[in-house]
Image (cartoon, rainbow over all chains, first blue to last red; front, side, top):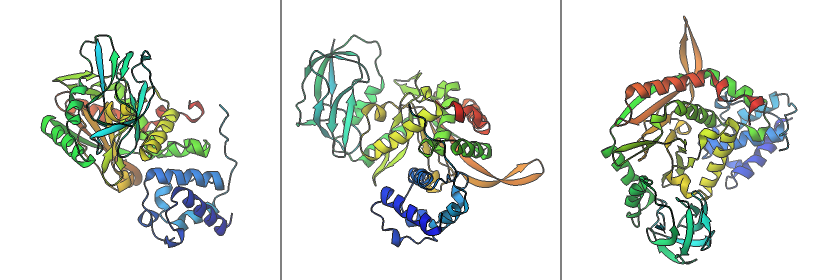
Length: 90
Length: 325
């Protein structure tokens, strides 16, 4: 995955979770939680969508270090994507 | 005997409500917990539930009519019941707060709590290194949409601990503590700009880690879209408040009457921890307990927090990936 591909995915995710936010106005190097009003539920949803769309699961222990959009992108493109376990049919 | 169902106060800027839909008809049998109507408040639609088993005699409230809080909306025929739910007395006080904003209701309730409940306060710092390792491993082996939230792991540990300390789970009404078998865990959530709302995950003691995760996500979504149920807003037996999101180190909550305890979590952060002769950075969290001294004392509270710490230090007891229901 390239940096641009990762960025597109993040833009897509933001459009779903924060439709009122203008993505280009977010400083990608500043802590995201200072740029956009979000709580741990929003972060959880971002992580779920990221894993679904990129195949990269960001562990909870890693999340505090990934403060900005660029930090997230850097992490994603540095990870091997892996085949995720599928939800079993009920 | 005759039983009057009244328009409930749902605590948020509400002095009247409008019945949008009846879910029952005259002659129907009704069970406790069954949804009986959908009520429109100024903020949202709420499903209201029956507090009693019985039969519907008459539907008094008309659909679309503005009905004041406390007014009769239906008549049931019920069995005589000794005692009854003491907290209805407390709720009567709330229904008399007409034209109150959410802030005023919270203010009134918290003042009563501070005035009437002799609180004691305990705090403990817990090493969350093992918990975070366990959570990471667990989530790596789950599909993304089944990912367990950190708060749910903490909640699960609290619920398991409350099973061992039932004197912290129940209602204190009319100078008496009633231990309640069910653990309806209230979770404090910000509600718009106005204050907080505390919906309870009902019967959380029956849920596996995975079921608790689903229920927690569901209650957040319904709180945000105004689709909470009456029982969820009124029947909590314990409350957890978490200000970790706001970057706060620790929070000592005020007990929500008629409950007898509230557990607080601060921000999970890395701190230097001494292991033998070595200092290592570990994830830690400050957990607090505010409890009613009429029901428990510091010894019980301390043992509860020690038990909770053990659950979090050995998190395999919270749920195992391949065994998650």
